[in-house]
Image (cartoon, rainbow, N blue to C red):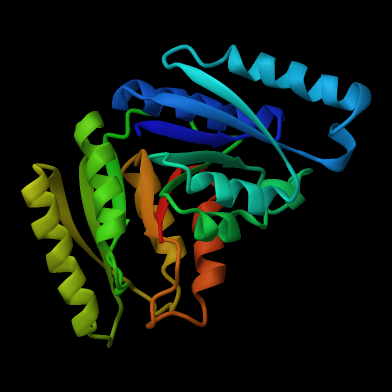
Length: 263
């Protein structure tokens, strides 16, 4: 099924997610399921009518792909996670950031949502660029198991956009990369080579030691004008104790660079 799932909370920020879903569906030659999980206040009366009117309005922003509207009721995270298992190819959603007015929907919970999703996710923000050709995808080297899940979706996106994948590694002073990290770096290069995806191997020395990886990745991605950053949503064994904070930092990065996730 070549369908993109696009959850929306019907806000202006969510329209950025709708825009990206339209862009990706056009490139993949697929369709879109626009999903709204109705709150208890939206189930009956005028609020229900307002929600459906807002959905119809957001639908008009989809110009390049067939679209189905879907309404569910209940806990938004549970219902979106369940729907993600129904044969969709990719989920695209917008986050309001750590201090957004709708934080209870897509702000602080965004990492939990992409971890519960059964499919890869592209997370965008309200200030993510409206024009994006995904010419550069920055993929930090990491020691995760099952990296193939991320490599598969990175390759899919890179193939339809003609992207170059930057395999990005931070060299910390006095620290040697683990065997797991080096093995994954080799896997990344071999996978992309087989997929016919152009890649660039980047090793960037870190002047001052910092245990985190997010800021260096964001700074580099902004410098090379990356269309997105690719990451595993689950923690690796190496950085388990700092992973959640670092991954949230990537998802809600200040430049608004979209983040492609797999678990």
